[in-house]
Every structure is written in structure tokens, then in C-alpha cells.
Image 1 (cartoon, rainbow, N blue to C red):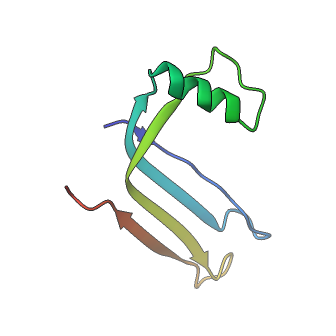
Image 2 (image 1 turned 90 degrees about the vertical axis):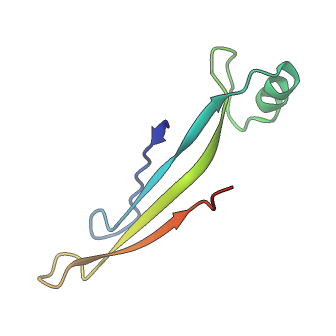
Length: 84
């Protein structure tokens, strides 16, 4: 399993949130699909880029309450994909 970790902070008081994503990444090899991805890209896509499909298996989002106080604590939301 290839794990991908993504952190994003959106707070006035330091890093008050973070997210972790994990799943399987597969390279898109189909020529027509690759062409569609590059055609519809919102950025200046380059042929050297490797398009992939990420199938999420689990996600965890952490939000911190009472940031920078003695009562500071994490509040976590977890999601796991249903097993087939």
C-alpha cells in the first residue's frame, strides 16, 4: 500500500488542523484517459507529469481545541473505506 500524507493548516493560531490520507496509487496508463487529464488540467500540465488515481482507504482529520492553552486537545475524525 502506498501511503500519501497531506497536511493543511488553516488557522490564525498556528497549525490548528491536519489531515492524513492513505490509500493505493495507480499510474494512469490508458492513452485516452491521460489525454483527457492533461486537456482538463487547471494548471499548465506537462507531458513529464505522471497522472495517477488515488483510491482512498482511510482518512484522519485532526482539529485542535483550546489552542495554546493548558486545555489544548486533539479532536479526530476517522474514516475507513468499506471492505469489498
